[in-house]
Image 1 (cartoon, rainbow, N blue to C red):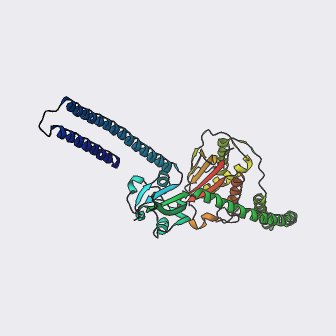
Image 2: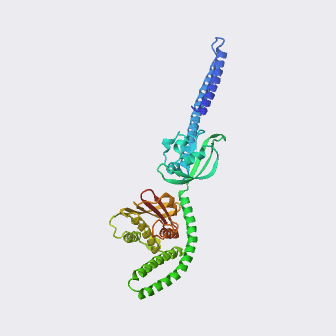
Image 3: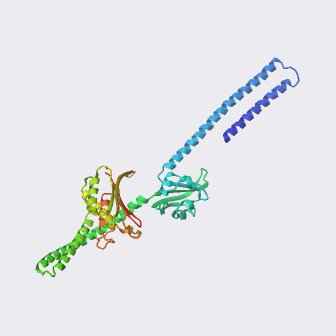
Length: 415
């Protein structure tokens, strides 16, 4: 029973007591002398009785009105609570509330999704049993955190970036009743930031590469000319040596061409691209006659993509060749494409995976840098050019690799 109902019944009892007392007083007054009351007295008693019944009838009506008001108040409170719950569950940021001892009391759907936990299974548990060390270290002091960024490892092993705030949770009277943690997944923004930084670095290096390439190409042309003249005047015993020189000049000329290709500003020739056909051609060129490579290609009937087909073909051939070369003994190569949509727009996503030797963690962040390579005869420009082509299409590229296998993820905006 609520306090309003209790107060109502108290008022009712008071009215009933006053009415009963008045009735008893009147009856005692007219019957106290043991004389039969006159007709006038009887009519007065009847009036009091009628008044009492009328009062009780009105009190019952008021009781019903009060009950209706109580029900309306409860319905309104339930509606407000449900509305607040809907807001909490709909916000894209993760929200976790704690009691004073930092036991979890509530978390919303976004928090469950980002941290890969289930709300029903963690409610009531201390924060140290649910959250990772990078967060628990910050919360242990119970100090206000206005803004902080931490790297967080989810239960599935996924590495994400979180931007979080931590502050006291107060009631309507301003009393602290717990703590509240609000956080946002910054992983995608961090990836974009990293891509932008890398693009700036590559732009500067590209300008240097262009200067070096032009300076080298002229003397290389002279050397190539003298080598051809020399090959016509020497005897057969020296011809293999001259041919070796010519071969190295050809290799160096290819490296210079790569330098120039990397340094050249990306001027896109936009056209409609049949994605399935283009990828099929790239696979045929890159895989060639390798019958030890098991292919799995999943490219649905996507709408034609607008981009520079020549540059994109170059990028995908390079990526597929890298995957094929990473599996000298054969393996599985899969490529799938699909569309996604989010508040930023519509995107074409492509995922290329192999079962090769993988990429060590210590060099994973360097593979898109120019001149960095682990191959004996590599120039270190292949993936740098791929990165440049994807960025020039306003896209992004990332890599995931463990002890075995590598996955490249490409995201391109659909126009």
